Amino acid sequence: MNFELVIITVFGLIIGSFLNVCIYRLPREKNIVVPSSSCVICGEAIKPYDNIPLISFLILKGKCRACGAKISWRYPFVELLNSFFYLLAYTRFGLSFELIPIFLFLSTMIVITFIDLDFQIIPDSITLPGILIGIAFSSFLFPDPFELNSITGFINSLIGFIIGGGLFFLIALLSKGGMGGGDIKMMAMIGAFFGWKGVLTTTLIASLVGSVVGISLVLFKGKNRKTAIPFGPFLALGSVITLFGGHFILKVYLG
Ligand SMILES: [Zn+2]
Image (cartoon, rainbow, N blue to C red):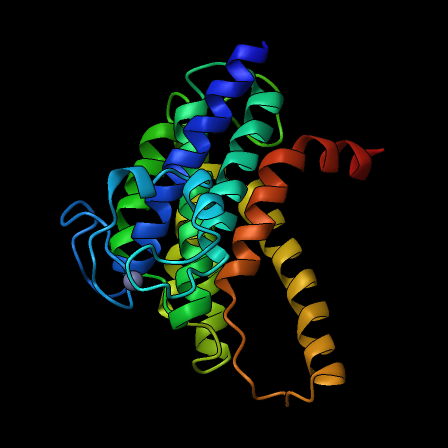
């Protein structure tokens, strides 16, 4: 049990380190495999021993060894967040093959969140393969967020894909560009993984949290109502809450 916890924590940190590469390179349309990482300020290649997730950041006190430029706290944060999500998934679903698509889904949500925060885009290179992978995994492995010991299922996944994409396509039409094409494809992808109940719950949570944050920004930060707030991070948050809490939410709702 403890050994498994350690393995999953370390695995989450290592994948988290790779997610940082994806977050930086995908929106810039760079290859995520080669070349190896280099300092974004001085361009010096980062040595393998300076590229250990979390540890290197602490040893180097958050500075590049070559030029001394500050390294963003976001790098270790993304690594920790990914590791935390993996541990949550392990606690909730146990050590099983289900963890493969669940880890994949959670990491994808982290990457989308930070790219959307930085660039206000959600790359097709993530969501389009994500839709296909979602439908494939839902058909035999991905757990239904609302039913214990049950998979989403192929038909439910297709309905989720259509409802997720369709609903947001409608919102995009009605709001005349208030919702981007990236959000539509992201919801289609979440629907493909979760099925129709999950995609609706995700939308509901994302809208609630998004409204609270939006109103707070207007009230306390002096933003006006036209300020564009990327919606991807809220959808990602809604989906993670749904994945881990769907069963519980349904029980409370029915109760
Ligand atoms: Zn440097």
